Image 1: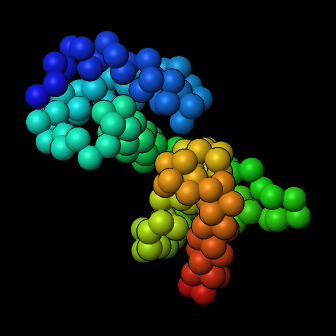
Image 2: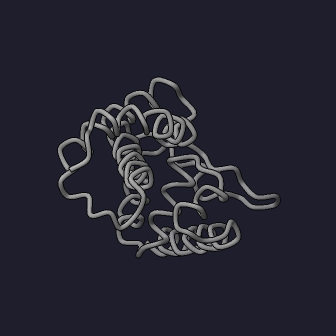
Amino acid sequence: MPDFEAVYRQYFADVYKYALALSRDEQTAEEVTQETFFKALTAIDSFRGDCQLRVWLCQIARNQYLTLCRERKKFTDAEPEPGDSGIEEGFADREDARRLHILLHALPEPYKEVFSLRTFGELPFSQIGELFGKTESWARVTYFRARRKLKEGFDGT
């Protein structure tokens, strides 16, 4: 078992910077970082060493950030592509938002996570691609396929 205090000292700045990049908000980044290390402390015995410890901590931070976004019911608009009317626009109506969440929940992976990271997490395509070990182009294509699937489901209901 790694010395958790040493892990905290060594990786705190990396995890904080990653959380700040995800959230673009210092308070949220601090909260995510604190929760990340709390969860890591409780699960450090389960760390198998399949990846670098920093990567494991950042995966926890990403999951914690997404959980926090869901808890806050944080809706943000993704940047629309030129000439593209976003289905994210106009979801102020609670019923429409509820329908969208039902469709999003039923969306298969990786579409669900890529769409959530882009729309709710406000991540750029380059970071989404990095998280999946893929290219920025892969992230863009996956996001737009997810949007198309959601739009088809939304228009069909």
